[in-house]
Amino acid sequence: MSSEAFLRALAEAPPVGRVDRSGERLGHFALQGCLGRGGMGEVYAALDQKLGRRVAVKLLRPDVMSDPQRRRRFMQEARAAAAITHRHIVTVHEIGMCGEDVFIAMELVEGETLRAHLAARAPLSVEASRALMRMVALGLRAAHDAGIVHRDLKPDNIIVTTDGEVKLLDFGLAKFRAESKAPGGASDPITTEDGRVMGTPGYMSPEQAKGKAVDHRTDVFALGVIAYEMTTGQRPFVGDSSMEVIIATSRDAPVRPSALHRAALPLEPIVLQCLEKDPEARFPDIEAFLDALERSASSESRRAPEVRGPSREKGPIRRGLLWGAAGLLGAGAIALAAGLPDDAGKAPPPAPEPRLKLVEATSTTGHATPSPPRAAPSATALGAKTPRVGPTSNAAAPAVPARAATPTVAASTRRPTVRPHINVPAVPSARPTRVNLGI
Image (cartoon, rainbow, N blue to C red):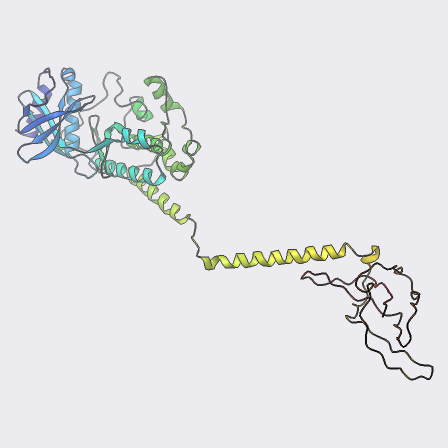
């Protein structure tokens, strides 16, 4: 049977009531159990007895067989998926009829829906979100290159396999673009009839929700909604009813992702551009989306902080030690200055000599008498309290009676500098204080 004859027979097939078919055979497929039920039909795990492989068999549900539009949509899914071969799109193995049963045999994917994946893990990290977004976009690009618009992209129609791959499925609302032809030369058989909106509220673009003509940019919008959920764990458009969600999608601006999850900031510009109300403001195609995603990854890697080895840290540490030493020196200088006389602000005289100068006593005959050995300084020289002479007085201090044979010390002898026991230079006093040394 040719493909055109098969499509005609499928469109004209009478509605048939169905029950759970687990355990039955459908041609060379042995149905093993129902995997789930969707809007179009029931999916069974089955064994392909010809090739010995497990597959998924999708049957049109009995309660929708009487609806010609839904029957056409069922066939549209088979045609659209069969027209694409890509690692991120579920593979269609066979489209067949067995008696009054119409089925699609496709690749059986082990994993979970993206909906379940996000429910357990969202918000995802930037790296995980970027990886999933890229795989979904690659699948969409393959569909768009074949002239197919998905029109019902959502987390329920995306499978995350056990090895982390992504598979797109459920092309029940797929639309062949007007400029392309479906396989066999047929034109697009899917349209919005009687004002009905085809799609899922919350994921439909504003133009799709209003029943307007759509193109591949409606899938870009849906991808933005999914990316928003990945990065924030929330939906951008919500409401208490489907109509409120549709109104919010067409009217409201979404909350910035970074306001809900700070880590989403690197991907925020990409997500928000996908969610633009005007299709012209979105990415013009999936290729542009992928380019932006790649640029964000590159810029983020360039902004990563440089990890420096220990040798690069020595400079700052040494500078810190030098500044600390300078601070200690300054503190010591301030402490010494606090003990200066009130006229310390005047210009200081020349620094005092570091050693005491003993003047030899001269006899009346004019001959100098030899100086006896130096005696140990008295308690006064070691810092004991003695009467201070005013800084402006030029008179010598009262003489201390000297023992015989003990030379006198000139009144001009200066007080030795007593340095504090800290590693700072001594600050000379503004004016030396004269003292009498008991020598």
